[in-house]
Image (cartoon, rainbow, N blue to C red; front, side):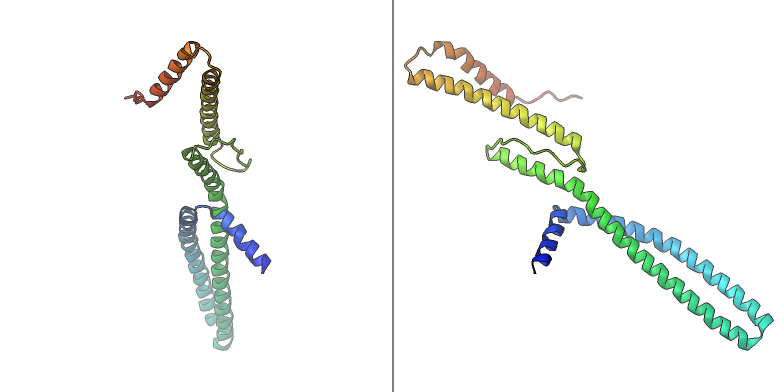
Length: 201
């Protein structure tokens, strides 16, 4: 029971965005199946054509009894080839599906992690980020996101330091005038961040 539960958990870990991952994997399987079917049909048709030529030659040279026996053997070989073709196509489709899920997991994993960090930012949490795995995709995008997150965290730390200094000055009954330039700078920085950015083009 525990092995079955563990297997389901491992599969669920690979399907982080089930809708997108399965759609991509099934698209890959569909394209592969179409190509395999076309090539397989051509190959099987050629084999059937070769069997027909052999059958016609056998009738004219071996006589009807031997030709009938050969005909049965050729039909058996054709069925075997068809089963091999179907088996190969099915196995190939399963492998492509598994490969598609694994490959999309390398993209869905980073996106899942980034989405979680974005939710943390919305909840006013700026915990340090964990790096992606070496095999994950979107490394450059995650690096840019991590740099943005680090800049935001550093800005918040600076704001906290300025507010703590002001709070300490108020609590100590100090002159607040020296803190006014820093507060004005802080206010201007916040106002600047709220202004619409200039768009190129």
